[in-house]
Image 1 (cartoon, helix red, strand yellow):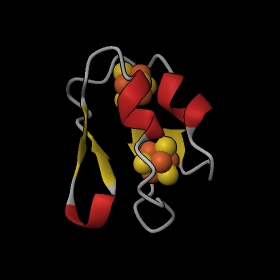
Image 2 (image 1 turned 90 degrees about the vertical axis):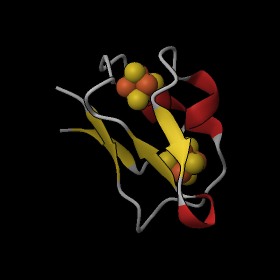
Image 3 (image 1 turned 45 degrees about the vertical axis):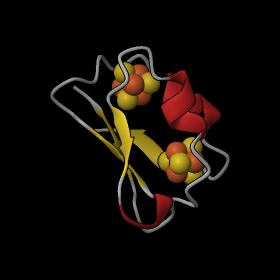
Image 4 (image 1 turned 30 degrees about the vertical axis):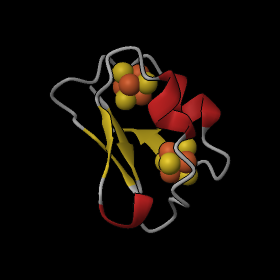
Length: 58
Ligand code: SF4
Ligand code: SF4
């Protein structure tokens, strides 16, 4: 189990990256964030912070 960012909707605010306890969210092109699903512990913190609700469990 992991969380995934829907890149088409991400506005690149960075809020998710700030709260991730295992620092598995990084910036890719244009400020859009990507979750390393192998490192994600599915805590849900990022999803709770995202202002456009573009992070969900997969
Ligand atoms: S669910 Fe938790 S561990 Fe996974 S990317 Fe989000 S904040 Fe990080
Ligand atoms: S909190 Fe949401 S909109 Fe902001 S960078 Fe993360 S995924 Fe993108």
